[in-house]
Image (cartoon, rainbow, N blue to C red; front, side, top):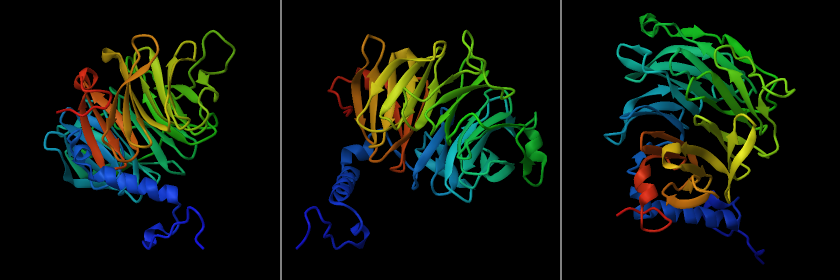
Length: 372
């Protein structure tokens, strides 16, 4: 007699899956065959899970791939270039240094990996590693680069944040026959009690770095020294937001001029007042929120979630409300980034997709965004 809900599939891949898991798998496979989803957002198909990305300029993106590679995507051609940076583990994060830090006319990018290293390379020639940053004792989970100085910030599963300084001139990287080996000039450890999943810099002065991760707390650091940011007006030893509003993993953080946004596995995205360290807005979802992107000029916040849906929230008029849903990705949304009125989304469905935020907001065909 077969127990209720038992999996009697003859497909060996499904022997250890419950009926609910099989139903979810079948739903995902149907979504992947949906011709509308296949075209939404003019997808660049990367042939590997996209764990993160960064925009180098309006025409180029740098991708972190689970296939142990970092690649460059031509956003106009809608394809990845063949050359790739190779790591010994999945590439979890990428970043690009400021436009003033170039070597041979090329922007300088970096990729972080489960192999515990960070590699430095030129966007125009990703196959050549210019420098290797070593110091973390566990997976490197996130990166951010200073916009005007050759300083890099990394967060790791080893619960530390490290600050790295590259040569003042990027041409010095190109002049070396072998990759430079660089150690961190500052190691921050002992404040976070869990893995560091996300880092972000304040967009106005780039003077403060914010960090968050599996301990559900948020902390702030001086971007040049790595010293804890002082907490003004109270008796705290340093600026931080303790676990409480967020109950578990914080996957993403983004800053506007006056507000910090975080995305969490507790199914919320939160907008924080930086002075009072209190939650201004809480956007509640039905599943884990994996990415967040405030777009102040449109009065909206974009969120991406674990089942692949992208939500657009109107926050400029009273109570936050979802004004648009984008059902394009068929697996977790992993990253959201914007340049001007264009924003991009990546997912574990091996795609990078492009959206015009004005078109999405002003779409008149209903809640779900399906342009003609």
